[in-house]
Length: 299
Image (tube, rainbow, N blue to C red; front, side, top):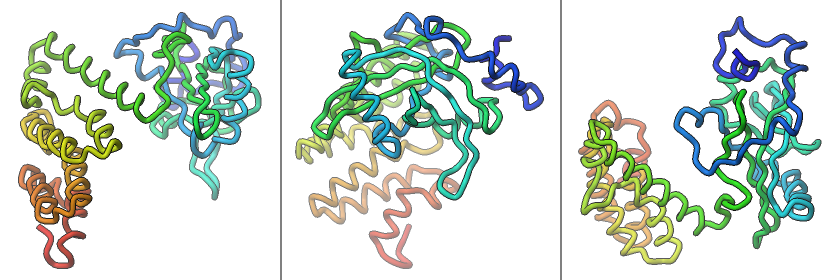
């Protein structure tokens, strides 16, 4: 078992010693992978997007982005540092990602429970950095690779991550279409589930990007029609006890903007009617409906 494998998912008693940790940091030449544009399902856990470059770490991340744009045409595969930071009054326990002395973000919270790195320890990890100049200034997107093997990045110098809201919506839609098509080709139970989640030839997962884009463009009626197609698909999806609520919430938001109070109530109630009783209480839909109806009138 490699050292990175022991960092990932090992037992508590299998934690690395300080001496081993100091030996883990790879040389930059060893960390640079082939930059594949597609990753397999079993590699997803190893590839982790760094969160925070555009929010809580923005000042540091922008400095890195400027350097990348100046010296590397906005793209670089290199070695960064992963540090396990203890919780304090300012923030919870986290796995911080540092590049050339700049704190550019952290791994998502679930990774903290999976990576067996003692608090206070640091380890070198392969990182992928993508920078772009936007209307709001330089933007940095970053990923970390937590595997022993060569990194398999989702993006590359030729295929950069989406930056604008329109590009991100397009990417979301493309991913959904690809997933649906693959499931239908695969067939079996997974294929049947995706067929059940489709209405008018469209799977509800494929509508997220288009709904967001239509809302941004102010085409609320068109977005609303797509929401209802998605709602029907989500209701037909047999894989979950409750229909995916996002589409219902979006429809309710649009009805609110169109000043259609009764329709807003109806679409929220529709979700609750299709939801198992044990999942209704405390749900976002139930809370929204209760607020809309007022005290003592929630369904």
